[in-house]
Image (cartoon, rainbow, N blue to C red):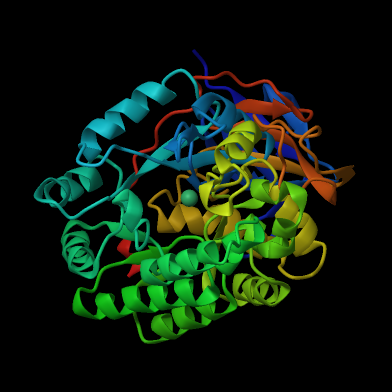
Amino acid sequence: MTTKKLLIQGGTVVSDSDVAPYDIVIEGDHIAAHGLRGDFDPTSFDEVFDATGLLVLPGLVDPHVHFDAPFMGSKTVHDFHTGTASAAYGGITTVISFSTQPKGDSLLRNLEEHEQKANGQAYVDWSIHGILLDSSEQTLTEIPKLVEAGVPTYKCFTTYRHSDRLMDDDSMLQVLKTTAESGGMLMVHCENDAILEYRLQRELAQGNTSWIYHARSRPNSAENVAIQRVIDLMKEERAPVYIVHASTAESVRIIQKAQSEGDPIHCETCTHYLILTEDLLNTELGHLFICSPPLRTQRDIDALWRASRVGPIEVVSSDDAGLPSADRTRLGEGRFDKVPNGMPGVEPRLTMLYTEGVRKNRISLPRLVSLSASNPARLFGLFPQKGSLSPGSDADIVLFDPNIEWTMSAKTIHMNTDFCPFEGIDVFGKPKTVLCRGEVVIRDYELVGSPGHGRRVFRKLDSSFID
Ligand SMILES: [Zn+2]
């Protein structure tokens, strides 16, 4: 079989450091060469993509999704089939999903189960993160094996004591120590459990059960103190840490300070924390906007955009964790504390970041690429295979049409749910063509890829990016 040769011609190529007009040659599954416009003879290629007027971006990496995950009596709307289809529509060519194993179960066996779930289902490439529910001997023994098996990142929680998922200080120190020894990176969901429980009981005692009390019972202070606590524990056992979904104005200052002191700490925020406010919880459909940490205020949004532009935020993920609207209504029973948490968002991420970020001059185009593709690839052990348009990298490429104007809605996108958190927002830009390892997955805005093309990517952290 001869290797297919493709040419992407006439586009404006955006890397994480540059915007420049050049043509890209793809051979088989990887990028083979760059050249000035007109350097390559179009007749010597199997297919030529005319990228005139389009932005050529590296395929996006979404390092935070929850596919096929049971949660609070429900299950996330996306599995590897529907989730990677929506991801492809959103210009994402690699997703990293969280494994959810029952407490006490083996992390490694869970990895195998995910492999089976995703086999033959995924349109784009995928990997998983582990979830640590304790620091049992089994967990600590399995961490190095997990790292070796290509899953060097895993998350723990500083809350959810009531469902037995809280990682206390003693356990966190053990896990940090093992992480440092095994070349992994610990991801932490930071909300202080004591504050959340105290507030929850106080609101319930006063009969405050409407949706907005989800935000009232999970204040900024709970997140801030939990992040500071992790940083203090890192002083005892220095290991790379990644704070998931930073959402408060103060959190980014705390993380910035720790970074300036040399701590190997990293953080992301999520699309919805950059755009939506807690005011949405004050509406009848507020339960559909319940996520943890909760949506915050405009003051937080402004600080998060600033931190996305200049740091310390390095990544914007989707935290795609939508749950069926009917389940949320039914299980919620009109009480904020009973609603399963989490929103879908894998598909809107690129268009929302372009519309709200680039078009509003909050971030540059190269910064958009850093936050959504290159940095997640670097931090999660995928670079330069992913998140890069350099020769040798996988031919994961998005031809993004920046001029299309449309309205974001559950009806205009392809997520497996009737709820879109960004419903009704007028937006700019849409992926026209998406390639994953040289195969066309989206062509002329429509899904043409095949489930099963997506493969598991083995990840290995590069200490030069995380230490
Ligand atoms: Zn999450």
